[in-house]
Length: 354
Image (tube, rainbow, N blue to C red):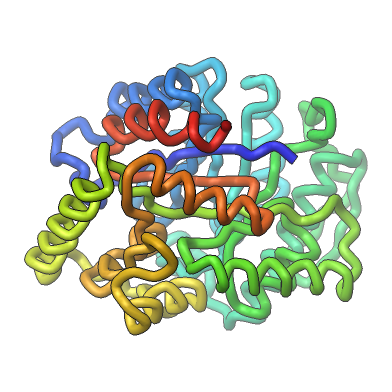
């Protein structure tokens, strides 16, 4: 199976995301388009667009960037509850039609400011039961006509999404990515997702989770093609190993200095996967060869909690070890975003593709 390399585009309201230079036009269409075009020019398949209330609407940003590019594939993060499944299936099918099959989807179930857009904060089991139905129904609407679905959370009768998704080789519909490390999340991934995304855990942790998910696939009776695996991680690349570590340590020192002035994520540490990352710092600042855990102690969250640090050769070696475990989808990033799109596209990706 081929390996795919995507980046991350920071659709944020506030400037300065993860050390990005502060500018008034940081989230303008021209700025984001410049990043998307650079991704096309420097060997990347596309980019993840994160979601959350209080950020630019992810699907709108994806549609705008797709219209200004030719090969760029947006990995559009969406939330059940913010979207109804039939509404989303129709919107995604339309964008897929208009872009010639360039849409990917990341379904997110983690906590958000749900009340702000009229959703409710159910318990974990309820949230993932709803996510399971969302994935089931969206897939049905993309692949079947006259769909009847009567679940606990969603219902449709005689529903046909138009325009129809055009099959392209083995691709019958946009790839469905999914994250989550709880037992409830892993059951959903094992049966309903196409790609399970991991954050930057040590190799042993990722290997353990892959083994568990493959066992769950068999035990729960997966009806789709085998589950694939992806890694979402910060890759901190410099020309030499020494320069990379000097810059990484300086950046963490700056995180420590400014920590009290930055807004605190109210959901930091509530998700099982995020807590797994935060706990890694107790095992040491550096795990495996070059997985840097110190950023998590000073406010780094999500993919910014741990960094793979080193020269392009160092980081490529580490990423190839994840490939050896079965990871085939990589979503990488570092700041400044545009500079690193070019640097890592030119220095890191050729080593991985070799």
